[in-house]
Length: 108
Length: 119
Image (tube, rainbow over all chains, first blue to last red; front, side):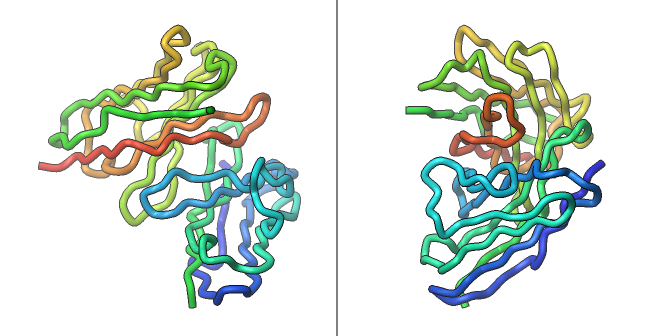
């Protein structure tokens, strides 16, 4: 079973600052990692897949990097709508889908 | 417009049953794998169940295996989740999600339906 560990659990930043979120896999997953954003009471929104490919309609301030076991989601300059919970996700043989425990990005 | 709309969530007593539905529109439903994912209050996202495009392959998380059943009807563009022997820990917002073609990530999500298992 591949375990995804996200850090930090909570990140407090101000508007315009750069956010760096981490996701570490317990074994190599090549580049098969996706990132999602979720706001309270809303559906998750796909941001990044294949570690670094932005999904359709996602602003350029969101970028992903990494391969193997260490991955990063970067938001270059925080906008008010970026404050949310972020999850990484992988698919392997079993369990079929794995999510990280999430990083809450809050306004400082 | 590509869309997924869930329904069927309700307040139910522990031990009870519910059937969730998810209707798809705006895309060729029969070509896509589908998932159910939930988020319990105060917790993160948890994958619940998967069904292949034809319905021939099905998987469940250990936490629901033997109690939940996923199915689909490609004529009605719908995926279902039959939930039996509900427990308090099944409480949460349940989402259906489309798996991107030939990929592993979920590119379209519904808004969710709320399940509350409580006496």
